[in-house]
Amino acid sequence: MIKHLKMTANKKLSLIYLQHFFNDLHTSFLQTFLPFLIERLGLSVTQAGILTSLPGLFNMFLQPFLGFVSDITSRPVMIVWGPILTALGASLIPSAPSYGVTLILVSIWGLGSAVYHPQGHGSIGYIGSLEKLPLQLAFFSTVGILASSASPLYATFLFKYCHDWPLNMIPVVPVTITGILFWILVPSVHKIKEKIKKQQSGHFLKTTKHIFSDIWPIWTVTFFRDMTNHGIKFLFPLLIALRGGGIEKVGFSLFLLQLAKVVSPLLAGKAALKYGNKKVLLFAQGACPLLIFPELFFEGWQAFVLFLVGNALLISSSPILVAQAQELAPESKSTATSLLMGVAYGLSGLTMAIVGKIADLQGIVFAFSLILLFPPLNIFIILCKWGKKE
Image 1 (cartoon, rainbow, N blue to C red):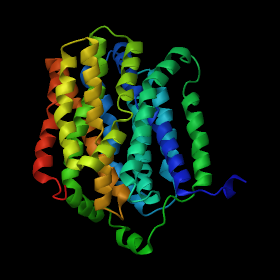
Image 2: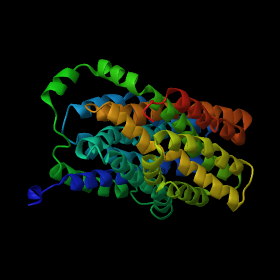
Image 3: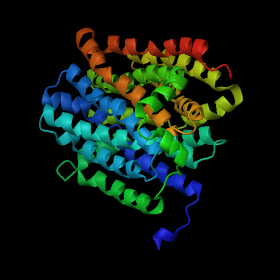
Image 4: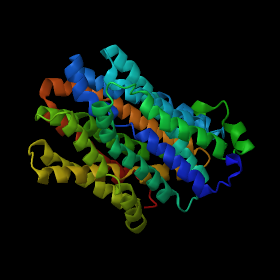
C-alpha cells in the first residue's frame, strides 16, 4: 500500500530534508568528543587536526565523482546509504581504543557525509522549481543546521547515558528506517535527458572542468569561507577546554553555536531577494570576523553573543552560493554543488592539519586569529570577480 502513495514534489523534498536532518544530526560528534579523545588517547593538537581534516579527503576527491554520477542516474542510492554510514562511524568514535581505530571510524563518518550531499543537494534543484530554488536550498541548509545544532547535545546524551550500551546501534536505527522509506516512496529523484546522459557519460573530467571554469569565483569564495568555518569548529572546543570547560560545556556551547545559525540562511535568502546577492555577501564576509574576534580575548556573555552572531553571518551565504552555481550549470546541478560543498569544503578541511600544527607551535588563540583573515579576502574576490548581473 505504501508504494501507491502519490508523491508530489513537495513531499519528495520533505523526505530529502528528513534524510538531510538525520545525516547532519551526527555532524558534530567528532568536535564534541575531540577534547575527550585528546585526553584519553594522549593526542597532540596536530593529531587532532589530522582527524578533523580526514573527512575533507572524501569531500574533495569523492564528492565531485558522486555528483557526476548523480547527474546521470535517477536512483537515490546515495541519499539512502550516506546517512547510514555517517551514523555508524560517528557513534563509534568515542569507543575507539587507539588513534588508528579513530582514524578508521572518522573515515567512515566522513565517507557517509560525502556520499549523501551531492545527490541530496542536486535533487533539490531537480525536484524543486527554479523560481523557488534559493528558498528551497535555504530550507535544505536550515534543516541541516538545525540537525547540527542538536548534534552535540545528542552526542553528549549518548556518551553520558548510553556509554555502556551498544551505542553504535542506537543512531543507525532511525536512518535505516527512513532510508528504506525513501527507497520505496521516491524510487527516482529526477528524469534524465538521454541526450545529456550521452554527452556526459564517460566524460567526468571534461564535464567537471567545464563547470569549474564557469563557477570558479563562487568556488573560491566558498573555499575561503569554509576555511574559517572549519577553523571555528576545530578550535572553538579546544578554546573552551583550554579555559577549563568539560565535555558537557563543549557540547552545550556547540549546540548554541549551531542554534544561532538555524535561521541565518533563510534571512540571507530573503535579504538577497531585496538587496542582491553581492551586497548580502559583502556584508556577511565583512562583519563576521569583527564580531568573532572579541571571543578570543574575553570570556563574558557579551563576547559570546557577538561570536554567535558572527558565526551565523559566516554560514548564511550557503544557499546563495549553491543556487548561483546550480543556475550556471542547469544540467549538472549535483556536479556543480559537489564542487562547492565537496571540493571546496573538503580542501579547506584538509588545511586544519596545518592549523593544528600552528596551534601546537604558537597557541590556539594565534591560530584562531589567522583563520579570521579569510573572509576579508572574499570581499576582494566578490568586488573584483563576481558576476556583473548584480
